[in-house]
Image (cartoon, rainbow, N blue to C red; front, top):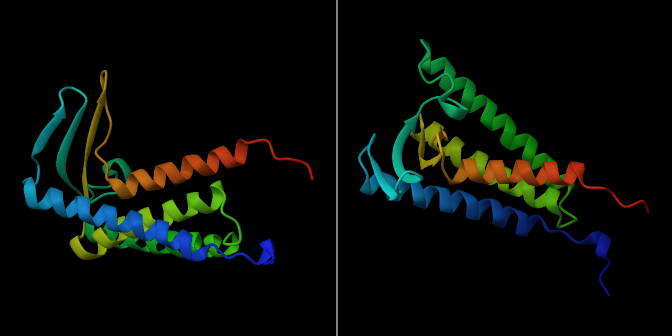
Length: 166
C-alpha cells in the first residue's frame, strides 16, 4: 500500500496553474479579436460588460500614467518574476497535500504567469471584465486577476480557519 506521506500532487497543481494560463490566454485573444481597444459589449445592462482595456499599470491601473512608463513596466515585470519564483517555491513545499493552500498557490501562480506574459509580450495587461454593483464600478480585470484573487481568498480562509489539535 502506498505511503500517503510520499504523495506528490505537484503535477495536478501545475495542471491547475496551466489551465488558468490557458483560459487567460484564450479569453484575452477572443477579446482582442472581437472588440476594438477601448470599446465595450454589454452583457447584463447596468451590471456586466466585456471591455477591451490595455492596462500598462499595476492593479487598478496604478502607475499607468507614470512619467517613466519604461521604469514602471520593468518594475512590474521584476515584481511579477519574483512573485512567480516565490509562489513556485511555496508550491513545491506544499506539493504533498491537496489542500486549500496548495490549490490557492496553484491559482495564484497561474494568474501571475498569465499577467506576466502580457507585460513581457505586449507591454501591458489586457483587462476585459467590467462589473458595476449599484453605484460602484469595479476596475476592469481578467481571468488571471480572478485566479489571483480567488487564490488569495482561499489562503485567507485557510489562515483563519480553526486548526485541529492533533
